[in-house]
Image (cartoon, rainbow, N blue to C red; front, top):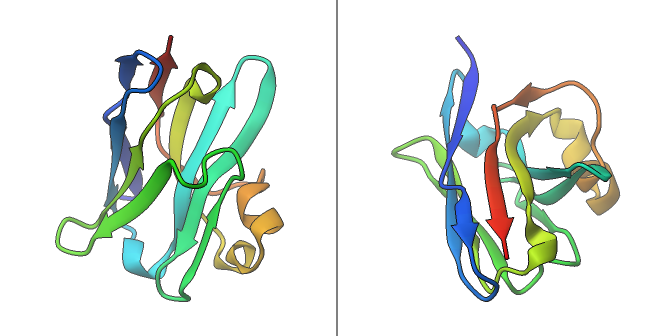
Length: 128
């Protein structure tokens, strides 16, 4: 059984922080191309932070660099996204996803991924 379960979303005021969590089952996060994607009603789903621990690559969207920090726990087989200094434009549904490893080779292929993969159910982030 393979699944990703997100949590940690919520409503915050601009300047606040949230920490998203993603627990993986059936996937070893340390050996996966895994990360966070954001979807809003008016935009296509886009990568926010994607990384491949086994390959040492990490990609952040330009709009979140310096504010968002990814991490993982080997013991809990989980990945996290610490989001600081949140702004209204950060609002959206955040999905944890495991995508094909070959997509973790460039910034564009990782953050722009739109194909099939393993996706969580999403967690809503609202910044006002």
